[in-house]
Each structure stands twice: as C-alpha cells, then as structure tokens.
Image 1 (spheres, rainbow over the protein chains, first blue to last red):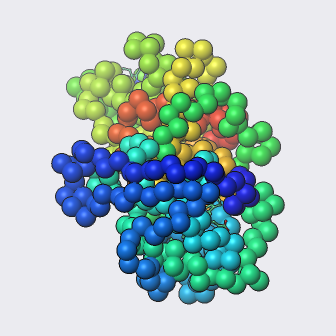
Image 2: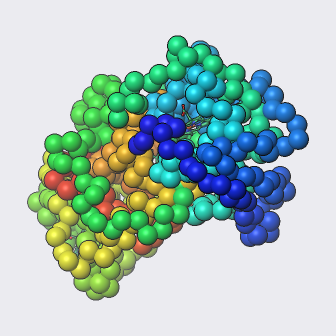
Image 3: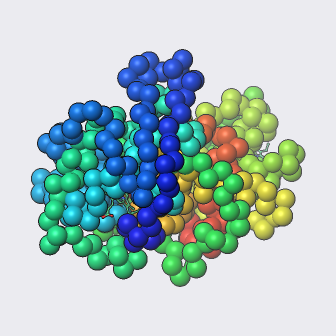
Length: 173
Length: 265
C-alpha cells in the first residue's frame, strides 16, 4: 500500500458523475432518499469546489466520523475520539489530517479514494457506479450525501494536531 | 466480546469491479509457515473452549449427528451405519477432501451435498435443508472424523476451472463498500477492523460453533456474514459460487489441520 497521499492523481478537468442505478428506483423504497450525485471536477488530486452551496458543519461531521454505522471510518482509522473504543488499525490516523491535506484533497479522498490510490480499501463515499452485487436496498445510494461529505470535510480540516499525526505501524508497511 | 464481533456484523461489508482479477493460483498463497488458523487469533478462553470437548458447544451437535448416523431413516429404513459401519473408520479423512468432483454430474460437490445424496438416493429420506440443525449435526459428526488430519483437497485437474472461478470471486470487489475477500484476508490479515482481528480465512473448523450465533453454522453461513458485512448480495446456500469459493479456500489452506467443530467468536 503506498504511503497515504504519496500518489497525487493529476486528472485535469475530468468530470465524474456517479451513475444512478435505474433498477434501484424501481426496487427499493429506500431509494426515495438517494440523491442524484452532484457533478464535481477533479484537478491536481483535489476537488476544490464544495459539493453543496452550504458550508459543512464540523460538529455534524465529527458525529458522522465517530458513528460506526454511518461513517464506518473508525472501523479502519484511529482518531482523536477518546470516547470511542475499538478503533481499527488498517489506515493512518485521522489526527492531523487537516494539516496534511487541503480541503479539496480531503474531499476527493472521501468522494472517490480510488482516484488517489486505485487499490485502496477505503470505500468511495460519493460514488455508485463501479459497484457489483449491491443489494437493492443499497443500490444507487451513495454512502454519504453531498451535505454529509461537506460536514466531514469541515470536521477533518479542524484536525490539525501535528503531534499525533504519525502512524508508524502503518508507515512501516 | 459481543460488541466487537457485532460491530463487524452490523456494518456488514463490501467493494469495486475489478472483474477480471488475476487468476493465478499462487498469488494469494501464504507460505505454509505464515498460515494461521482463525483459532490462533482467538483469546485464550475461546481457545480453551474449543480444545476441551466437554466445554466445546459444537460437540453437542456432533452427538446429535452420531445419533442420526445410527438411526434408520427413509423408506429404506437404513441408517448411515448400516452401509458405512463405524464412522471412525469409514469417514476418517473424508471431510478433509471435500469439495471434490462428483463423478455423476462432473461438477464439484461439497460434503453437505454428498451427505444429502446418501439421504435422498440411498436412504430415500427427505433432503435435509442446508443450515438446518440436522444437516449441521451430521456434517459436524462426519467432519469430526477428520479432526487433526491435514486438509487434503484432491489434486484433480478437472477441479481447476472451478477453483479458479472461486479465486476470481475471492479477488473481486463486491458490494456497496467495494471490498474483495483478498483485501481483508490477504492484504490486511492480522489487522483489526474496529476491534475484530481479521483472520486469514482458512476453512479449517467447519461447521463451527460461533459464539455470535449461539449455534453451529456452516462455512457458507460464515461467508454470507462477510458478504452482508460488506453490503454485498450474498450468494445462495449451496450455490456453485460458494462451492467454488470453498474449493479455493481449501486449496489455499491445504495441509492445515482440520479442527471441526471449531469455536469462533
């Protein structure tokens, strides 16, 4: 696994738009809540523009990250969440993420981490094309909404604690 | 303990369409010395529970299976024992070679399927539903007769295409979370997903008594748990996909010791 952030993709003006699975509209009541993912532009390893007109809310973002069934983040990452036991160790710590990565880089990492590292195990939180064997209840639904992505980006940007930034066990890999 | 295991369950699991992933059988094979059973990732209490037949809850299923082995069934009113005699002799090492190629259909068959053939064709009794108490009990009893023996998947060239299909599934990303089996069980084995240690996925203990389930369950049930965890549509019980996956997992684990009935968190 490459060191996080070591592979900056250089995709000029490529436009990605997750396909909305047609079938899911027919099969899943849950899909009433699926939103048609917004267009975004990847440039220099980042999505510079927010996905929504509303600025993200870091407090809501923190909640999403800490909630196991929503963000899933702590299944793999550790971070400054003293109240959360059982944090995973499959990924670099989130502490200091806001110092290491710009807002736009954080946004791309969440929207579609495969653009940063094609082999990544981190799910793409705002993409639904490219998936196989998705049960009807989840088909065509992004893991997070555009507004939730912005909340998480806003929260991660506040994590500027350089002292806790390293994760030696992962970097040694 | 329940908490950490259920974190995995609740989250379900998943991954991306690499589609034509590498078919080479060698890539995912850990050298024998690096292979670890799920047993090795358990705490001392669960290990002790598996080791001691008096405390291993899976042994209750084995006892049920033994009773069924000796009970006349079906229109023939023949017991398994009537044809096979003492299972300690006749079933020794049998479970360790399954799945293998069914000569009649020229497709792979797993142990559950083979036992069911005897039920239906030879005893002329009703088929046992997969994952039902009776099927699990008989499979556990037959499985026990291979305990301590090395997994010995047959080196049968006719099985190769099926095993490769199983490997392709193992390395293909699936589900809303877009994981392949290999990303967890090869690339991240030994790491922790939340608090759950990720084992290497060796099918050495099946059917297992899983503390999370409070019952015996088959390998296919375990695999369905992993698929649901990654939010992938699980394959059906008894499906060719599962049997192909099992062929690949057994091959990957060949030589490792059968532990049936294993205990797992």
